[in-house]
Structures are given as structure tokens and as C-alpha cells.
Image (cartoon, rainbow, N blue to C red; front, top):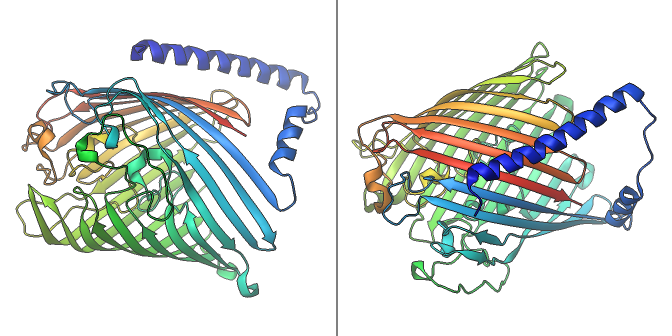
Length: 493
């Protein structure tokens, strides 16, 4: 395998060359300002191929990622099983179609598959400990029918397997990913969504019912692969650790100029399916505010309180306790609106942790928000901290800043720093493999740094380089460094 430093340098060189070419082309274009050329023969072919009739459209994409991790799960380079370093090439391909046989009625489907080539032993799922090609199955990650303007009203209904997210774009907090077990391969929720728009007061109301199963073949019969080396007692692939049911009532209004105000109620019922799952009845009340003022200032604030009951493994004992937890997610951005599109932000987030000295459970549950919202690296550090669950973010307080700009057309450079803290010193959902990795006498999780370079070459090809680092603090027993590197190329048809 190529050493990560050399791999990173090669990718940077490639993108830098592409950026230089793009910049030269941009300057030439600005100087000459020729008339826009007609669509190429390829573009005409793509347009006609993707829209063969007036009632059918389709498309496809291929995403290739090479992901390299250091200490992300083990938390230390001194892991006795020598599992602190992983490398995997992920190849996700998707094809989708939308048919509109009747006015205001559409049928939508998307098929997705993601085989993975582990050049270092796998550390996740049923393929843990193995190398080589992990031939996964294909899955229908969207299959739904959508009806608009029902009864001649601004009412729409979408029923079936669909993607649902609430909140600021790419900062979806509690509802975004119903399938954290397969990573970013799919995001769907099996659900029914009813949306009503009151246009006179710029208000939208959503009612969502969720019926999500932990196993991928619950609704659709699938020929799941037999592993060459079955381990982990034959643990199957799973979408999540428990069967989940839920109801979301969400109201959003833009009646106030330059302001969006949201309020919501979420009920989530968990029914344990796998050993690291839980049983729970979680009730969440929340509100969100965002806006754009003086054409530059962009504040965002979201908070939620949770109550109910949860039954899971706490310090080695499976027990039920009353839940009382809260979370806060805030950001203050400033848009320079200059030639380079500079943007800076201050960031604060708080997710409560469980106090081991009480008989209740104070640990905030992120619900369907278990996805790499702000970090591709740190979600893996929670696997041994939260009973074997990936991205079950809680007991964290982060304060930091971010900056992004566009040096040339199609390119974005961004960086973010967070100081990470743990409100509670004791991770009450820790499991044996990492029991000795926590100090139990410190609140500073560490320094987090992220740097990203993205480039959109054209409508069909994009790429990025992504790097993250965590320098561990006194919350951990050691002072090692976590690292994540990822080059990615995306082809879209």
C-alpha cells in the first residue's frame, strides 16, 4: 500500500495541476469573453439518454474513495491486536429513475452497491479482521411513490423508502441517516411523509411516520453474501442495531423576514435486535432558528430536550433507566461576499453525557443523526465508547471556528478547528476492548483539526482531498494522535 504521506502528496499534486489548468482557462475566458459554446455532442447525448420520454428520467453515479485511518477505533497505537491502522477502498455505484405516469404522481427508485477492498484488516461489521475484496450486496435504497397537490391543495405525500433530513443543509442534526450501520453507502428511512404548505404565511408542516428495521433484507429478499472467513459468530450485515419506529411532527416558517423558525416533536421507539442494540422510548422537543442579516451575518441555533426511558448496557449491566438529556447546536457565520467568497464561522455544540452518580440516564441520543456531520474521523472513536455503536455522538462539548474560500472557479478550500471536551469524565457505555483507553479523570477530549480541498472539474467529475487529526487530551489514558485521510473521485451521469 502507498504510504499515506506519499498518497496525500500525489493527490494534492494532481488537484493542484487541475486547479492551475482551470485557473488558466478562467483567465483566458475573462480576457477574451467569447460567446458561450453550444452544448457538446456528449452533453446532448447525456440529456437525451437521461430523458428518453417526457415521463421518465434517470441517472447514475460512481464514487471511489480511499480511506486511511490511524487509532480511530482503538484510540491508541499500542493496541494488542495491531488493529490501530486501516485502509479501505470504497466503490459506491448508484442508478436511479423517476417515472411520472400521471400528473402530480411520481414513482422513484434508486439501486446502490458498495464493494470494498481492504488493504489493511477491516475493523467494522461482519468482515472485521479480514483483507481483500468485501463483496457486499446491492440494495434498493430508495423506492417510493410521491403525490403532489392532493385534493387540489398544497399537500404532498411520499410513501416508501426515501431520504429525509431536517435542519440546515449539511448540518442536519437529529434526522438524516436511518442506516448508520452501512456508513455513507445509504441514508434512507422506510417511512411515510405528509407535507402541507401554508403559502400565505410561508409555513410548512411535516408529519412523518418511520418504520425502520435493523436488517437490510427485512422488506426485500436478498442473497446476502457468505463470507470466506465467517467470524464474530456469523454476525450479519446490519443497517442499525435495533428495530426503530418513530413519529416526527415538524413545523417551519419564514413569516419573519430573513428568518427561519422551526419547532418539532420526535418520538423514537427502539426494539433491540442485536447484542449492542437497545430498547427505548425517547421523546424529543426541539426548536431551531436561522437567518441572514445585513446581507452578511448568518446565525443558527438549535436546541432539544429529551425524556423517556432507555434500556441498554451500562457499565456491563443491561438495565432500564429514566432519560433526561439535552443538546445544543449553534453556529455564527459571516459571509464576506468578496471575490474569493470567504466565509468564517464560530461553532458551539453540547450533547449531554450520562452521570454515573445518579440513577437516571442523562446521555443525549442523537436519534437518526448518526452520520459524519462534522467529522469523518471522530465518529469511529465512539464505537468502543458507546457499546459498539458507530457515530452515537454524546457526552461532547465542542468550541471552534471554520473558514472556507474559493481560490478559483470550481474549487473550495476549507479548514476547521474544534476544542473537544467531555461533560462527564466516565464513559458509562464503554466496552471491554477499550476499557483501559480512558483516564476516568479528565474532561478534555483533545484538539481537532480538519482540512478539505474540493474541486468540481465539470458537471460530471468532481474530487476532493480530506484530512482530519485529533490530538488526544486527558479524557483518554494515552496521548496518541488519531488521523484520517481520504482522496475521492465522483463521476455523475
